[in-house]
Image 1: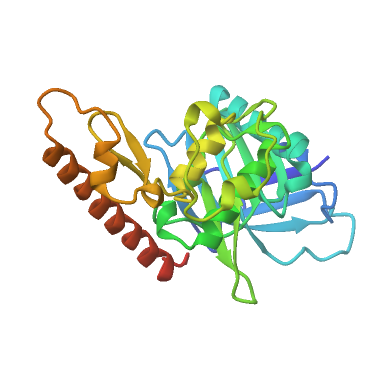
Image 2: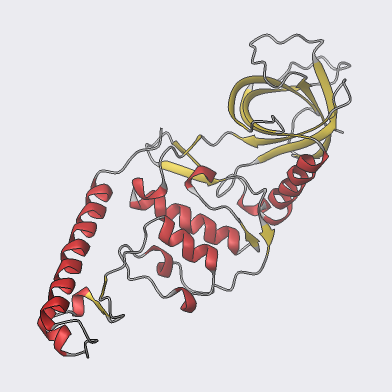
Length: 309
């Protein structure tokens, strides 16, 4: 059985932690390819924590330790990310997240979601309940919102979510803060989707082609016509689609590419009392100018996007 040797003080980062200040946490789950059963965690950096310190995300060094009876040397230090939970309620959520990673998303580990090294749950020497989910370090969270990044990154994020849906999992909190990214040796940016503590299992009703989610500047479908709310919101949040409709306050609308001239559009509808033909023409003209400006700004960002650090 694998065990995690975990520092008692989760807020103390040290290069040489006191060996007396560790707890032994038994494995809830662990990766079958671990070379040695026992792991030692050395805390390196606190990435995130809530005000009550019941949830933390910590970057740590992980060393695999052989049994004392052998003459084998410990492994080299591996940098990992640890999600730490304190208290039974938070630990229950952590174990549910570990189950989703290891059961439903197992085939996506290391490609779409991080590789799971193990989940360890136990009590500290003081009697506190603690759980630690150890994940592959896949880089840093996106610093800016999704529309600030390149089209390729945004499309990669949406297609990653689609792959998760096709495994029967709804993420439940698909935002830029739950995407991590790093640069590969070849200079390409790769991302992983993280944080499945709000996820649940469901069959995704979207059965369409990937191109429906990744066509740049495509006119978005109506929400009522799109079968999956999370994928629909993801395409909007990632600015994959671009709404090219001209909306008049009367409720009439036109796609800008089909609008030959404001006068022709106005003459094709019945205006309500109080709105003159000139008022309607001016309103449509303002919308055309605003839409052109929005498209220009979107294209400018795509030409010079933010790059994940």
